[in-house]
Image (cartoon, rainbow, N blue to C red; front, side, top):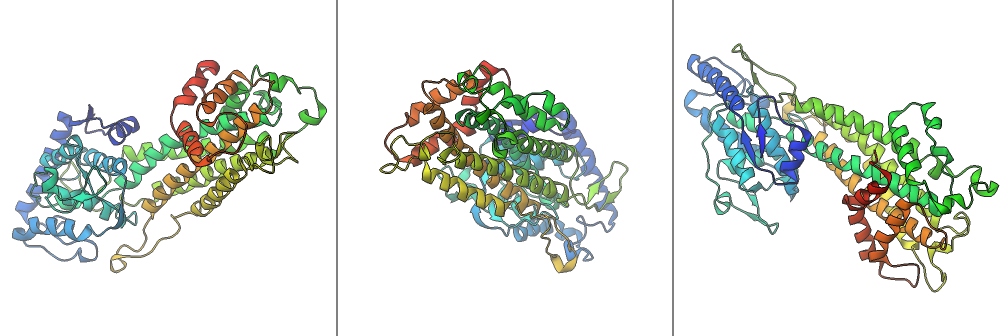
Length: 506
């Protein structure tokens, strides 16, 4: 059970709800904060003051006064008109993250909504009812308007719900009990960065694991190619004190210890002088990606503490317009992380190519097949990795520089943060696939070094991969093998087994 307080939630809370189906409840301090905030809005209603979002229209219609008897109608009309997305539905975990973050924002007591509104979103999460949210529609300012409107529409009994089979059904068919919105509440439900932030937080979780697995696959490749472990000694990284680099180097160094393969050529001048950059500089690239990840973590942590709405209801009774819904901080962080992650994949593919090239693999057979010619080995697996690297290069182009004006030039600069975080998720998914190709290739290379044995970590990796890939031999249907390797990279199974021998990896 995740309890949402007036001070917010943690990244772990979000992962538990979005991916782990944890239930949600509202703390008493959150209920009190929402009641106090709503009392201020009710007072404005009684006084008849013109306040944006309470007694006026929205966006370019902000100067249009709305009569009291039509203000509830205004909130429902706002939700309907803004639920204008199009395309395939967003994944269930993204929508659950959005709803949780919107509850978090409302619970901070600056949005002027009744506790009943936040409770209605809580009920959707706890009943495992996921609104159908199309992939296109948000420009990242004023927040994720269209995606959040599709969530809000379900609250009033309209729109679509994502069925378990991937189809869409009506809220009534899903068992939703509609609520009636009051003044300000429709706007409060849609004016936030919750989609962007949810995707960024889940991407951060994924990237942290993948960057560690990139160290694992790099170490396996270095072992398979008779590389040196000397460039990863800690004293060589204290003289360039980037923390991510030091962590990555320490991982690789630890993974390569107690390896008969490494010992077999430790003093061989042909092998021990200098390795190629894709081997020797693995910590410099993966480490820089780790430091980029730390920046994204910092940005996301700040956003989790932020009140993102417009207008906001201040405790002293003022209702003020803000620009806090602008997603630039999140868009920049997502673009930066996508660039870094794409390079983690790119350098991994270069190691794969080296493993398969008889001219550079240090006596491994062509394409890691013991019978080249009739058999092509892992030749086309490298093609797959190369194609994915090329796609990641395109996706690494920043979305956050691509602003387009909207709403009659009232909203004349937008963040594109939704697009930035969406493509970041794709980049990371692609990196997982590239690392799967490297895992299979490195294990094949180590198998072909027999009777020499790898490190304890390498032996674990070989034994795990052998369960579904066997050993070197005639060509096989590779797609299911690569899918199994991809599952091994994305899950925590192999990492957990290796950490039992090496200790925790950073």
